[in-house]
Figure (cartoon, helix red, strand yellow):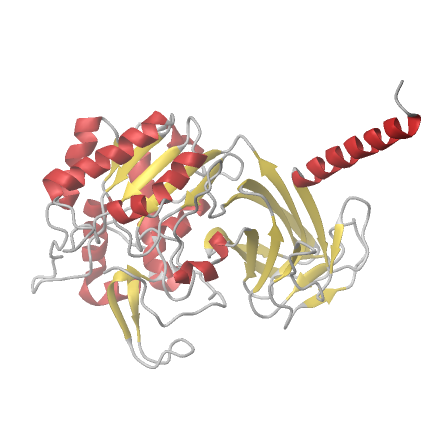
Length: 446
C-alpha cells in the first residue's frame, strides 16, 4: 500500500497540473473600465493600468487617459474610460478567433465611438451614444502568432513587421472618435467561427500606419458580428512566390479548417523583373493553381480577386492598364479551376474613372507636405490607398462577393447600403478619425 503522504503529494501535483492546464486554456476575460474595484469575475481597469506581459493586459500608453468614477447604475456600466486622443488596450491571448463585446456610453453624457482592432482593422465606424444611453456592440478579431503550429518553423517576418500590432501575440483594440467612452470589454475565444484568410500584397494588407490603407483592413466591418473572422495575412511587397517562400501560405494552411475561405490577390509585384517574376499565362497561372489546390486540400474555399488599377490616366480621362495580361490570366484560372472570381480589376476601373483624374487623388495617398507629423515632402502615391480609397475598394470586393455563388455572402450585414462603383461616395462623407501611429515611409511595392 502506498504511503498516504505520497498519495497526497501525487494528488496535489495532479491538481497543480490540471490548474496550470486550465489557466493556459482560459477562454474568456471581462474588463470593467474606469474602476479600481469591481464585482467578482471582472477585472477592474483604471487609467494607471499600463500594459506589461507579466500582468497580461493594459493600455499601450496612459497619457491622456481619464477614468470617470462610477456613477449610479449597473456594474460594468457605471464608470468608463475616456480620452481626447486614440487609446489602445491590449491583452495576451493564444492564437485564434475572439468574440469581443464592448460597452459604450455615459449615464450622464454623450459620446462618439470608433473601434479598430490590431493594426487598424475597421470594426465599428461611428457609434454615437446619447445622454443616459449605454450600448453593447460585438465583433470578431483574429489573433495570430508567427509560429507555425506543430513545427519548429516561423513566418519569416520582415523587420518592420515586428513593430506591427498584428504579429505581437496580443489582441489590441484601438478606441477612437470624439471623446470615446468605454465602459467594459468582454473577450471570448471562438472555436467555430468561419475564417476568411486574405493572401496578398500592400493593396490588401492591414496597413499599420496613417495615412496608408488597404481594402483588407476594412473588410471585417462588412460582416455580421457573430460568425465570420477575417484573418489578413497579406503583406506589403509580396508576390505569389515570396508569400510562399516566407512561410505565409504554410501558416494559413496550418490554421485552415474545412469551410474556411482563402482570398488570393497578387499581381503588382509578380509582374516585376527579378527573383519573384512570373509570366502571366504560364508560371503566374501555375502558382495560382498551386494556391487553389493547397486550399482545397484543407477543405477550404479558394476565391480569386483580380488586382485593382493603378492611378494612371491618359489624356482622355481613361485609366491605362499597367497590369498587362495578369488580370485576364487570373480570370482564366478561375474558369479553368471552377473557383469564384471577384473582378476587382474591372470594378476599380469603373470606380476611379467615375472619380476622375483630380478627385481620384483622394482615394490614393496624395497629401501636401506637412499634412502629417514628420512629413516634409508631399505624398503623391498612385498605387497605395488612403483610408477612403481602401474603404471604397472594400465595397467593390463586397459587391463582387454578392454576385458569386459563395455561401459567405449570406454572412454580410443585412443593412449595408447599396454600392455602385460608377457612383462613388464622397470623400467628405467618409468618417475616419486618424489613428495615432503615422509613417512617412512608403510601403513596399508599387
